[in-house]
Amino acid sequence: MKFPKISVALILLIVVGSFFGTLLYSVDPYELNPEAILLPPSLEHLFGTDRLGRDLFARVLEGGKISLTIGMLSATIASLTGLIVGVSAGFFKDKTDKAIVVMIDLFLTFPTFFLLLALISYINASMWVIIIVISITGWMGMARMIRSESFAISNAPYIKILKIAKVSNFKIILKYFTPILAPIFFISFTFGISGAILAESGLSFLGIGINPPQISWGTILSEGKEVIDIAWWVSFFPGLFIFCITYSLINISDFLQAKTDQKEKQID
Image: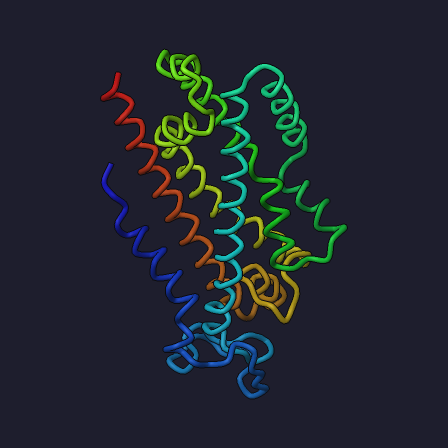
């Protein structure tokens, strides 16, 4: 499988544009203009304007900061949590593994998005609250994969010899588990970013995510649904950015998975 150059370039373009685009495009995303309400895309307004006359391109760039931050931080926290839990289950086994399996199954009993809705409905949503909530509901898949692989590693003869030699558990995990588990971690991490962005967008679209005046791609989508019949561009462009990020991350995950499978075949 070829390296996904276009996907990587697209992600870099969106990330750099969202965090540094305002240096080149200095239009205020919050500025109201009653004389420019729902204007279609043009040279003056690249993505058109919304129902309050605000420049949509500036708002999509600004919204990308929150959406991407939520995606990256949520995926980082959830992936690290899943890694720690999964390694603990596979390495220590017995009672530790049983307790962790029960905890994972308990979380998986509830559909993730409905669990998100339940948690958010009792908390005043903000960027940090959404990051924590998505992290709480997103670590189980990583933990199950890491647990399965950790079992295989911990049963290897050289790991048993290290345990008999009383090498510290921390050193064994860091030196021998981490390199083998790294590909699984990064595959899950890339999926986690796209999943977190979609989760935030879904919550904001339903009106229980990011609250104004903060902007995310989900909030712009939510605003656009009321005028979609007469102003398609308000919903189209934030949706396009979400699609591009998600599709690119999936391509990168597929590439990492293919490389991992290729290495495993070479070892066999």
